[in-house]
Amino acid sequence: MKSKHILALIATTAAFVALPALAQDVSYRKDIAPLIKKQCAECHGADAPTYKEFTLSKEAQDKFTKEKTGPRTDTYELLVHIIAYPGTGSFMRRLDDGTHPLAAGKPGNMYKYLGDNDAERAQNLKLVKAWVGDGAWYLNRFKARGDVPGVTKEQLDKLKLDY
Image (tube, rainbow, N blue to C red; front, side, top):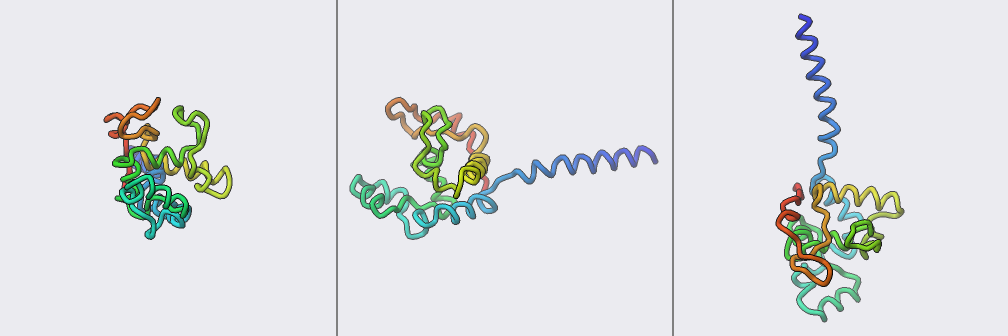
């Protein structure tokens, strides 16, 4: 009888210990899509160009930038384009708070839009980094450019991006 109570106590304790881990699981549907919709849709919504359209030419980029429109991020697939490929690292470069070694202390140009104040921006960045994956927050492009090395297979393998 005593062993049943001990087993029940262990099972209950294990369930409570596991709850915080489950609560910290970040997914596109539950966490990232609402954040993107709230913070980014004005310039990166359904009317915005795809990454391919945005990068078609220097003239296209200049036109969209002048219109304050960036690549669409309103679907999972389009968002993955600016994280993994073909816009490898673009998402991270734009949202970084400047603490990444390759950022040299300079926040990305979209970091300021992650929230209305420093605390909200920091919290939203933490959420996005958790979704991207532990150790997967890289600022590298697909191919090396200047002092920035190209992304490695090991970095790409760390991407989590749960749907």
